[in-house]
Image (cartoon, rainbow, N blue to C red; front, top):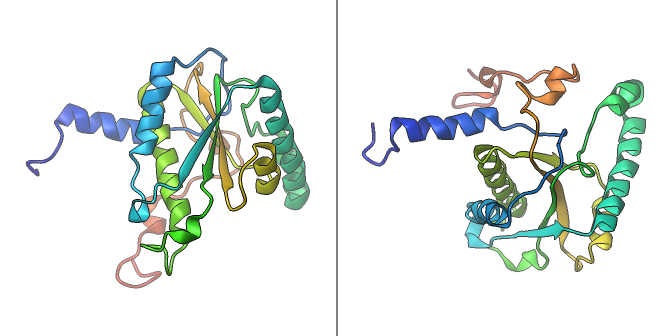
Length: 215
């Protein structure tokens, strides 16, 4: 065991947060205390980012009317997604895909504008800005789980429509509508598994050695 390792209890808590994190869709209203929200956002802000560019921007939605308009944008894409799914359309429309009207807090996570000026680590992989924002969202998710709050990542929206709604500058791009708040219970497994939509695959299916496809 490394001398830099956390204690056994601390390690167990980290792995528990990872294992019990869920993409939540069912919320019970309530509130998130300002100091708690600040802690969660600080956890997000401590994420790794390529070239230390910190491309994340978070917009807290406190206007109920704006929240409803965001939900309308999501609903439009939900219908389009169902149409694209063909024979699975009816099953998809039965799924609860967001909790925007029920959750305590709505945050929109976005990529900043003028990202092209950041070359370090992105010359051949420009999408590393997206990877960095995803790390920030995951930090927020795990911290929320540790605090007993649910969080759901909603990606069903047309990015430009949401950007226009939020007055984002050219080049900025929304990546996630995040629903955050108290929940009655956390799902015992991913919701899409519980609903019979799909089944998570084991790690062994994803792990190769030396060459693609070799195990």
